[in-house]
Structure formats: C-alpha cells, structure tokens
Image (tube, rainbow, N blue to C red; front, top):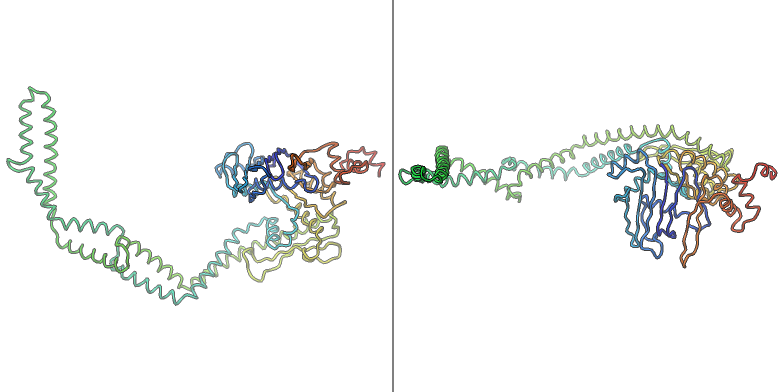
Amino acid sequence: MSLRRISLRDFVIVSSLDLDLQDGFSVLTGETGAGKSILIDALQLALGERADAGSVREGAQRAEVSAEFDLHDALRQWLEAAGFEAEDSLLLRRTLDKQGKSRAWINGSAATASQLRELGDMLLDIHGQHAWQSLTRPASVLALLDAYAGVNTQTLTQRWKQWREAQTKWADAQAAQASLQQERERISWQITEIEKLRPQAQEWDELQAQHQRLSNMQALMQAAQTVGDTLQGDEAGALQGLHRAMQALQAQAAHEPEFDAWVQVLQSCLDQAQDVVHSAQSWLRRAELDPQRLTELDERMGLWMSLARRFKRPPEELPAVWQQWQQELAALDEAADLEQLRSRVQSSEDAYRQEALQVRKARRKAAPQLSATVTAAMQGLGMAGGVFQVQLDELPQAQSQGLDDVSFLVAGHPGASPKPLGKVASGGELSRIALAIAVTTSQLGQAGTLIFDEVDSGVGGAVAETVGRLLKQLGSDRQVLAVTHLPQVAACADHHLVVAKSVHEGHTLSTVSPVAGEQRVREIARMLGGERLSDTTLAHAKEMLRLEPPAARKAKG
C-alpha cells in the first residue's frame, strides 16, 4: 500500500508535474528555496488538510493535486462502506481556486475533506522537521506511549465523561433542592387536576362526533322515516312506480329487444332501493334519542374545555400535555433522589477507575520496552552511552486520559542522571531523539508510506550516515520518502529525486526529476561542496555512492 504517483497543476511555484514514485527509500534534495516541501504540502492538501488560496500559482485560476495509491484490503473495505468504487488503485483528487474554494474526489466521486483526512491516516505518516517539539507536550507524549502500548482510550474517555456528568447532576440537584421541590409541587398539582379527566388520545375528536350525532338524532330519525315513506308508500311510493314501469317494458320486450336492457337497469334500481328501505328500517329500530347519553357528553366536553382554558392549551393537546407533565415529574423525582444520584456517581467513578487501571497496566508494561528501544537507537545517532527513559507518575487528580502523568527523560552521556527531555537536550539532540522515536514507532501505524521532512536537521558526519542507514532499513518494509540536506542520507537512498528552481517568462517555476548515475553523483557533490564542483567533491560523492572500484577506495584509505 504505497504512493504510486502524484500530479500537480499550478500549485505554488509548480506549473505542471507528474511524478512516479517507487517502493523502498527515496530522497528529495535540492537547493534551499527550490520547493522541496511543496510535494509534502501538496500531499497534505490531497489528504484533506485546510486549503489556502495562496497555494494557487500566481497567474493561474486554480490549483489541482492528484495522488494515486496502491489499494489495500482495509482501504477497499473503507471505500465500499463509504459508497465509493473500489478499483485497482485509490485516486485522490482535489482542486482549489483563487477564492479559496476547494472540491475533492475519491476514485472520481465527490468527497468531503473529512473523508480525505480519514483516508490520510491509513495512507501516510508524516514526520515533520519540528517533530521534536511534540516531545515536550504532555498530550503528545501520552499519545505516543499509548500508540506504542496499543492502548485504545476511547472507553476510558467515555467513562470519564459519564462520571463527570453524574457528578454535575448530583451537584446541581444538591444546589437546587428548594426550587426543585417547588417545581415538583406545581407539576403534581397540574397532574392531579388533569387526572380528573384522564384524557385519552383521539378522545376529543370522538366526543365531538358523538355529540354532534346525538344532538341531531331527531333530524336523523326523520330523514330515515322519510326514506321509507317515499320509497315504499302504497300507490305513490317510488318502489311501486319502478315495479309498474318494469312490468310495462316486460310486456313488450318480445317486440323490442332493447327493452330487455332497460328492464335489467330498472331491476337493479329496484333491488338497490329495496336495500335502502330495509337499511333505514333497521337503523330506525336501533335509533333512540338517549338524552342521558347526550347529558353525559355535554358534561365531559365541558370538563375538557374547562381544563383547556385553565392550562391555555387546545383541547386536543391535553393528552400529550398530561404525558409530558408525567415525564417531567419523573425527572424531578429522579433529581430529588440525592441518594440515587450519589450512588450513580460512585458506580460511574468505579467504572472509570477500573478502566484507568487497565490502561495504566498496559502503559507500565510498554514504558520500559519503549525506553530500551529508543535508547538502543540513540547509540548510533551520536549519543553513545545516552539513555532514554519513559517515566510514569500518578496524577494528583484523575483526568480524561487516565491516572498517569507521562514524561520523557534523557541522559545525553554516560553517568548522567536522566532529566526532563526539554530541559537537558540541545536542539540537535532533540532532533536525533525525535528521529530515534520515529524509527522506533514507525511500524505502529497502518500507513504504507512514511515521509520524513528534514527530520535530520542538526546532525551531520557519521551520525548523518547512520540516519541514512536507518531510513534505508525502514524502506525495506515500507515506502519511505525523505526531504534532506545531508549528502550522507541522500547517498543511502534507493531512489533520488532533485528539485530545481528556474525563471521562465518572469515567473519562478519548480520541477522535480529523478536522477541516477552521473547526474546523481553531481547532485551529491553539490550537497557536499556547493555549486562549484571539484574533482575532490566528485570523487567523494562517488565514494559515498560506492561507485568507485574497491581497489581505488582501498588506495585512498
């Protein structure tokens, strides 16, 4: 899972760049100000970092950055879960205009910057030239130890929040007992009043419908009676008329076939009219005025209206209001139960401390291992006899990150007592210690590509060569890209990229080109002695690259 290709268009001082990258250890070199860090800035933009309109090349309308990566199973699962096409590779693309507006795509589909950042944690691990600064910040130190120990503090943080919330509720309840009691009494009275009615959902609509029906029962019964009288009267009834009409048509149907159809229509009308008569008669037998029920409805609707006016709510809202007050009373009862709240504080604290002790156990197990590994790495970085120590102390008060105060101690030479790193180490020593930690912890993450941006600043000589060998060693397992000024580091690389700056039509442009053979020798020589190349610097460069025959190197020795 490595970075395969990066493409830039109108980014900072790069007009156009298409760069293929290889596995192993690659270095990026060039003169100061040539734009070596531009590639890293572009990668960070492609991986969701904040967009700055100043990154658009002067004279251009927009900048574009694309980065292509090998696809890993974990990446494929992430893409499928997020709704993106999982193709043979992963292509990230981002554009930025002069107004600072940016757009992003993942495998051709629109994406958000947060999605790019989420992918970034799986793709790249960048160690900046000021990485040592984080070694003096407690939060960074703790996070580094937790990563080395494989500790996931998500559960710990969650239980800390639960404990704090329980404490807050208990304290608030203690401080507000008087007001809570007044509010409880008020809501209890409201509930008592409305329980006289016990309104049910949809009951108001049903009451209105029943009341309207009973209020109009006399008229309804009269209508039903009229139906029977009109349809079934002796000689003048509609049914008799329909029957006579049908008989007349039947008598002549033999002479006019069309009459048969009319007979069928009249028969249907007669059947339906008879059904209506029977239904009306049946309804009349069941119907009654029932003044008692009407009185009951009047009384209940009156109570609904009275409570609605009292509480200034529409009648149909009373059931919901009743339920709401019951919930509020339950919450007040809970808040008033100080013993229950205190018990909840205790149980949440116990859960937090149990998790914190598990985290502490893992940290105390990992601390000596990290100390020994970083100490071993320091020996080859110009700090022979130096000691690195991870110290764990107990915090005076529990915090979200646990019960431990973690600090890095260092002794720069044999016999010295380890002391806080930021107080005893020089800038160069801090850089070397940061590099030792970076090398030690580089295997912790899942990122397939490691980038070191001038992390070797402040070192030189034999130490620089050791740094180069360490980075080359890392490159045997994962893809490593390092920005460096040190020829000793550059000479150890499997691949060499050179950044060059030129002026074209009044504009400064930067290019990146791979070098090998004689071109690489000349670049190493420039790094050794400056722009004026001499036979000595060229010979030294060849020796560093091991291009001279063994006999020649032996003769020089």
